[in-house]
Image 1 (spheres, rainbow, N blue to C red):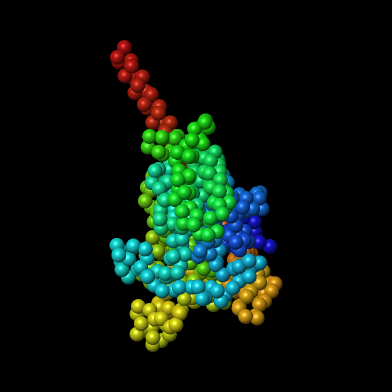
Image 2 (image 1 turned 60 degrees about the vertical axis):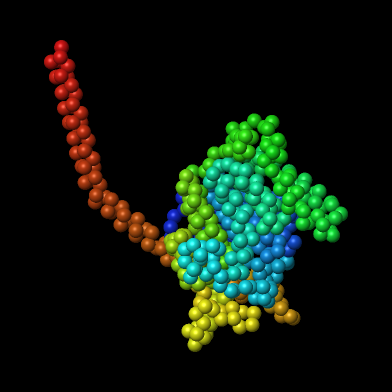
Length: 477
């Protein structure tokens, strides 16, 4: 039986090294990302997703604070927060699953663009050899703005004029602007209090109602202008006017500088995880958030990632850069040795690999020397996946079937491996305890004598100082 996320203990400050508990926790969060999102993505502002998750798991330590979605590219994920601490988790589900729990392998292969391109502007600034897979990079970039906005507000403890201007960016789709406002509200709710989050959420809800009730939106007329109108409504003045009558010590409204100021966080713990293609997106997310938080020295942070059954994400130079930036002790990829999906995308076969150093295109497929990110942790087993599997055409399997790539399989194998290690160590616990007890017993007398000698020396020093002071006072009198 799978462990509840609540029962999994995590350190107060994230530590280096692989942890079964952390890997299982992130795996389960990814599984929930599959379950919580309907095929339609839910409402534009994601409030139905938020309410559904937190109602379902209301007795647990983690709450969903910000859903992550891109309606065009089919990305789904979520940012969660631990209730009593500043531990955050970003979990991505793969894009291969559809409604009613169907895994569609054919759609994933046909939509996947594995061409190697420069990693953002880093290739031009640092090393032009750093190449990343175009399709996965674009997947992450579709939700990057809202993720970075969330952590910026946490790190700075304030919202500045340029943050409101992001909602006017012409390169963002209307839904992306809404998502950015939602993430701004979520982070603001943590820093400034629930009144702030409610104020922005109400403005977003009201605008969406007006948008959906406008008859011209079906003709595409209102759609193109929605982004500008949205930015005009969700702005500093509108939020400040709603908050001006609220007395709260959690934030200050600076109308002159159009800034809302709170108290920044001193330390942030961030987990990043994903399954399947979501694991590849998690690779880009972990690297992006790590680089971003490095730019806020006033807020210390620890970031750790666990990718479950992930595909390759870039060339060797990109993998080396990511491993150095995140740290191999903080980046792990859990791989089932029976999972053939780990080989994607594919490397050109010999001797074509020698003749095509920059990659090779065969039809719709791009072959190159691709690499994984992070330290490998292996499990082995066919497992049993609870979803239905759709391979296209008439081949469709239902119920629990062996599926080495499935998230249920990975959770099962990790739990079995953890329990196996515990069983292996259990007979040694008594022996180890006896050995430690004997070692302490042998040292006990020496420790006591050392303490006594130290105490005696201190007493003698104090007595000597008192005598000196008394002699000085007697001479002066």
